[in-house]
Length: 288
Figure 1 (cartoon, one colour):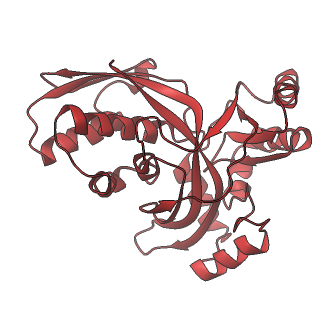
Figure 2: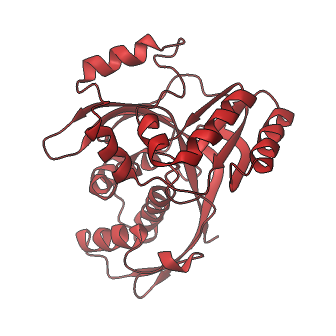
């Protein structure tokens, strides 16, 4: 079997706690996986090649190629890999598609190349390539602090409900979202203040599900996002933006409610892409 899943993630909450001198943002956030995934076909080869169902993502600029190339050099691996990525997760959506692809490729390379690096070694290696990659390598629903590298298992409740993922057809650049956030000084600047802010909105699990410090910036950058999110909140039990956007998630009490959310979004041309599915606690490649 040469096919491996790279699941989308959803941030259950996202608070920005600090901006470091080097420009990196420190976060208090939590992640859960979904049943939506990209599919990577990976085979041993003499050299490293990465292709994608979206040709613009082919080649050395793909994050998968970058992380595998560096991993290969670090561990002096002579073999290569032939990787083909079938994209199902939209780009610039806050669902971690590129990071998930990179994490899955790294997990598989670690096995196929016989490197045998530990999960923590993989996480430490991956941090410079993207703040979301560690949550996929951790392998289960997680809570994170710092720049995403300080991970612990998330023990709070995960909604056992149908959920809708929706994307307005216009992405939000992560860099742009954080830059707008910084310019407008929305952040609390200290972990203590951010923790108090999250607790103040708590409904029992230590944070309000769906709280996202980047939402105000994202809806300013992407006007269609604001309209889409408003309808999702009106039609579901709870809706929020994931990561830096522009995808949003709605927790629904039934499949009928989820299908109604999708119908309304499509009839009003508010979403160009939707997915009805469920939240998942474990990564398909990492078992306890």
